[in-house]
Image (tube, rainbow, N blue to C red):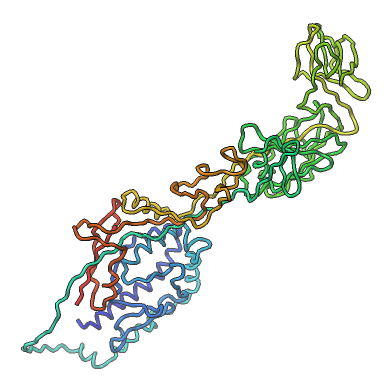
Length: 582
């Protein structure tokens, strides 16, 4: 058959496949991206494009189809109506000479597409779904294929009367002659290419720990300070936990606020508001940082027994029982300022505040604070600040002296010298101010880093290479969150340090070989050891691709390739390519 007709048929087949791909794009958009990418990843279509087309300044060049065996150049708009041309920006279109060279790049890009990373991330150079939809939106009026310019040579050829006459009659001529051909022997040469992808895999995550920590100071007591304000705390480590707030909590209307730990609960801090004997409502304002994983907010009260009270939250009154309650409103509005106010409804002052007790007098002395019962349960005497208030020797539960009413505190007692018991004592009075505390307990979990984002399929390939000792894995840190101490700021410290964690306490899984465990972006690269002897006994290659010379030699024709070394999962490690040269 005439070579020109052969190439014309091949060209028509290629163009048919190109236009069919437009329908394939539309069909792919009816399924989710991951499924479409998975189907593309099983594509086994492997023609040799070298004999069909080339690249001419970004245009597809069909070889030998125009009159005079010249090449036909088609731009992207000729092949994909409405699609803007792409460049090699961001590795989108690599330079290739055979389809086989595209497979590793294609698999990596499909993996990135499935996981939404690399060029296909929200900040990448490509957005697969947006690009596909743009093509479909601009392709509503695709012109008929009959009008495409590549059919012009075919129509001109069939309209040629000489061609019609040639095919219209069949005449058989028998000619006997002697024909001499001169030829040069061809030589088959082989080369090797690496069948695996050795390009770096990018993995990244975000550090979302505290941007800044409250500072601990000692000033005849423990304090945390930040932004020009400070607050009393129980222990220095509370400053780290208190850093879940944007600023030091503020007490209003004469109240006093302090912060304290929650016992052995590492992810917890308490804000304690004291009414400080104010006659009006006192308040506390605070804001939990929006990036904190706040799990619970609980309010509890400590005020004179039987004293009714009112809690005001964000300006609205909320009646809260004495045992306290969870307050999900605070959890749901983190990142916003929280305003709490607390007031005893009947304005009662208590001395000392709940949670404290006055020292009982020593034996044989009249100093201290004590409510003393004799062996028959009668009140023997009441001491307040060293003064004996009464010796009634009667049964009673309270005693009023002036504007104060005194009560025994049965939570603390000791044996009395007169065959009785001595108890702690407190007093209350109405008017002039209120006593009591409002404790806001904030529980949280600290997740310093978001999960790693990477191509899981690509990571599995790299791990397999390392397991089979074909390659080593190298880690390059592109960005890190570590501070000057080699640690990262944290609300909950480690190794006795407040406000930072270091070393093995920083999670890096699954990249446990990282030396900088605070890394936020890394490149994971398989470093392969070339050389040696392959499975056929031939000398193996010493670089990733030894075929460059044969590819560039115009006297050499690519004949095909076969896999000469495989990994345990069936993936080809080394391809041997054959070229006919001469």
